[in-house]
Length: 241
Image (cartoon, rainbow, N blue to C red):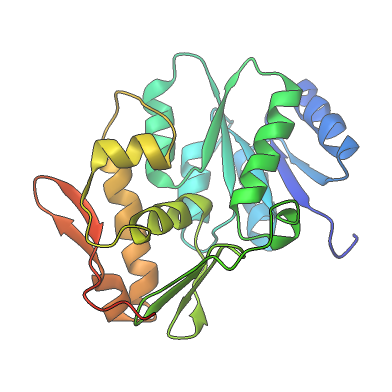
């Protein structure tokens, strides 16, 4: 495999869908691996560092929700869930366990390619950001630094690996310190998806984000403050210039 080649795992129990997605994604220069069931997908995704995983929700043996949940215990790989129409509750559950985006079946393969590219731009893979204008876009707090150009989060000079959605949530809050955002606002602006679902999607991501920051610095984790009955904010009494 070429060192700088984007690697994508396509997981679907329908051979036709896997082959179709593989063909379109390979045309874009991506390297594609396939898995037809949940157990195979989990083994591949655990052993290899993929840039994106396209994950069908309904799979034999282990479904997409369970795979995503297990992966999030050790990996921040960007995940796009493939769901059928009418599975709204499952999509909400997918967001709660760490899915970064979803695509509804039936879909256009071209749409999938565009969504993959958009997710890569939002992920930490800087090699896919070269079309963006160079700029010094860094937010610095006493214990936390966010380099938005590189999509990199540093806590006490140690890099913290976040999923695209975790990163977007942190960056969104950090842009306006001490401003309180409701869960509804965060769902709309960070997830770009207005749905009638469980607001625990936001709570779950905040909890996961705090846990990752807390592994390096309790002070950094405590900056994400819950405003009871309202929502969340980044509390930063002292911001370094």
